[in-house]
Length: 96
Image (cartoon, rainbow, N blue to C red; front, side, top):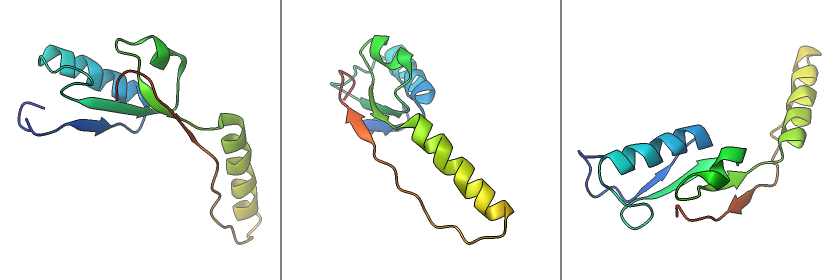
């Protein structure tokens, strides 16, 4: 972050990585969200209790697991598979 002072947002692949970005920003003296917006992905329980609370993308975990199992079984049986798109929801909190 110090090499890129113009960096104004981080979208992390997981909430755990986003929480790490929050900590790194704090250590570098960057204010979230004033200097740097941080968004995670997963909506783990910890996301709502970070300081500031983490904005994140919520995915339907049970539906995701079921779709993955169906795709895997289809591939194992030699059948053609297609992409599966599941609904997501942006959970806006204080970090963005």
